[in-house]
Length: 320
Image (cartoon, rainbow, N blue to C red):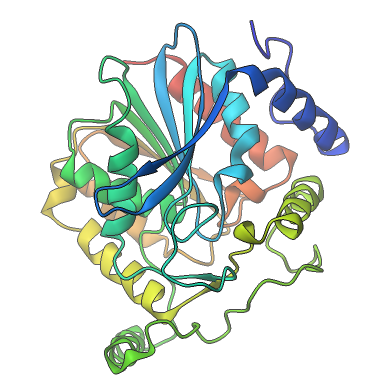
């Protein structure tokens, strides 16, 4: 069996070697391609093909990331017997963009992210049970997708999903000013405090807690300008807040998917109370908190990533 002797997560002290070994083992089963979405936008995807898959697993990346960030996670699920699908949301990686500046992430409406996910899943054999693992921004997109496809996904894990954002007080005034800026044609201007790509980014203050993962992905980004998203626009932020409003609606209550919500105990991005609010809407859901994790749990140290993988190994290990 492919990757049968691999231990997850890859260890910090030997991360690059273990990741490279896994990539080499998976190379014969890896298929890269592009699909044309319903609005004629090109989306890049990758499939790790199993001969007899137990189910399909789609991994939805976080904001300012790419499918390339999730090779370790693809190997993790592949070793569990899943046929794994990765893709770049529009405005990320090798997928189509609205803005030429590749340091900038912009979207007019988060529904476009949900359509990207729908365009990918429409190409997955319906005889395969469909599962999702979605991180941050991808979690918000997954919820909007499941609102429109309440019975399509068997099981999903949303890792620190973008349910809303901690905003400067008073938050109502901040949102009003943001909407006014967008209406004045400033949608593609950067959010104050958001900075463009810096190839010499230092590990301290980066938001990563694993230096091995940080340095590996920093090297990939430096070599490929398509991976250099780093800043958000006011239009993106406005769309994110509007998406959070739609998430907390009756459409979410119709979702029949079994959902695991993983909260970061040290999250400074998503308000804690929103998890409970979402749990009340999802009939088949439960919440787990990783007390030492920060918002981007996937960027944590070996313990944090190991705790998350252990949790997901149990959760997805036996399909119901």
